[in-house]
Amino acid sequence: MSLHPTLAKVTDRIRARSEESRAAYLDKIGKAGTDGVRRAHLTCGNQAHAYAAMGADQSPLVEARAPNLGIVTAYNDMLSAHQPFQTFPDIIKAAARAQDGTAQVAGGVPAMCDGVTQGQPGMELSLFSRDVIALAAGVALSHNTFDAALYLGVCDKIVPGLVIAAATFGHIPAVFIPAGPMPSGLPNDEKQAVRKKFAAGEIGRDKLMEAEMASYHSPGTCTFYGTANSNQMLMEFMGLHLPGSSFVNPGTPLREALTVAGTERALAITALGNDYRPAGHVLDEKAFVNGIVGLMATGGSTNLVLHLPAMARAAGVLLAPEDFAEISAEVPLLARVYPNGLADVNHFHAAGGLGFVMGQLLGQGLLHDDVVTVAGDGLARYTEEPQLKDGALTYVPGPTDSLNDKIVRTAAAPFQESGGLAALNGNLGGGIMKVSAVAPELHVVEAPVRIFHDQNDVKTAFRAGELTEDVVVVVRFQGPAANGMPELHSLTPTLSVLLDRGLKVALVTDGRMSGASGKVPSAIHVAPEAAKGGPLAKLRDGDIVRVDAVKGTLDCLAEDFDAREPISVDLSANTVGIGREMFEMFRQTAGTADTGAGVVV
Image 1 (cartoon, helix red, strand yellow):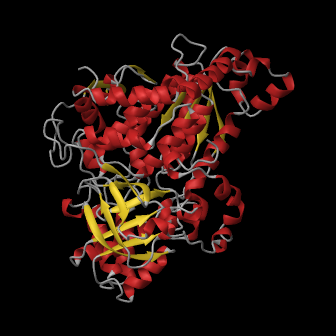
Image 2: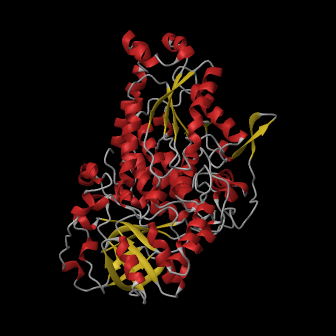
Image 3: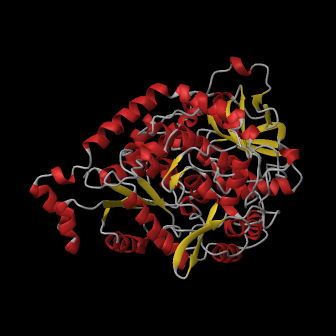
């Protein structure tokens, strides 16, 4: 199947836009690759320090006759998704040794749980943690003694931060190794129903806690299709995972076999062998277009619209909002996974999963197949399914028909003809809306605004009975410069109750929503942000605002709007407490949302 003309056009535009920056990037990693890993050129004292703790692996390291893998791990046991990584370094070291290679834990990176910090001051460090992770991974790899890197990470900012580091060290191969989702617990829709009852004051905290613990109940990634699981999709679509590895549960024989296979593949693609695949060659314009296609086809997290431009910039590739909008208009929605449906990622995987979706998209010319991946050349191999046969990992053809068309569908009969995200532009600025989970009758909301500068004030107004009519809730001064651009997902139960009462409600903010957010129409990532004098700072209570995901517009209808001066507010409370003092430089230097809100890229 020939490439779809829109994908060809968008890819060519990205390539032209990125011509200078990509050429400089490739020159940089080319020179680094020519210089090679410096392990053999270190002083004897340097090397002794590097190998002192390596025991029996010291001899092959000194002789520099075999690849040495650097493990960058985001393990901690605060995140259920990352707890399984505790045992991965030992598995990786044993697998490397069996192939006459070596592996070392190069370093660890922080990994915060947005589920813990949701609605709390710590959430204001969440987005910036992506750049901290990139910096920490850079420190880990700066020893320059590794022929390839294995990245252990899953969750929201962790994978994007690690990709930024992998691109920066793009002269060495990078293999991303996932941990997999926890087994299914309390269904996500039932959990959300309990949350709404609690928000409405119908049940007590004990019932809410019981439901939350039944949903988040074991090691592994949360099972809804939020940012963490969207990250895993992205790594497959961009060729940084092994095929079919994203949604295999932790603690299973297949999970361990895939970890071993990922190690073996990293050893095989270093510059010391005959199949050199540096990360910078995997992370090209086509890979990022494939990632955007996957995001749209699966109804993935809006956070990736923020992270993808930052990741791409690290590889010299410049993405723009129109790239996302044009791809979304052509790519059908093929999956319904919570919050876009009732199924969780385990159900999605069983119904055909990523391999089935990729096969459908390839068949329509909606993916670049001629790409470099860690598994080999071409994306078609990612339609195959890993299995264990007699204890050995093997790949078999994946399903060509959906095993449950309520969860995943063919390109000939999609859930909707266009993707899950809509770009919005108007006199209030530019933003995005995730429409895949929003009822069609809410794709356009025109109503008076109620303005807030803190998400907790929205909840207070709700409890006081102040939100009783159609309303556009505006939560402004939530952008990167204001307070780090926190997620406002804790507003979802409150606003959902208003929808259930028959009101037309929309949210407009220069902040973010969680990948778990869904049914409330939300214009998010609005830029320029209010703290930078953006148009949201001109709004007044009672203004009529139209949020139109059909036409892609976001406008205040007041006749004098353009003539108004933006207000400013005291943001000093955002600068102290829970570590926020240390991030003032991040708030001052962060880029705009449409470029990824980056600090290091």
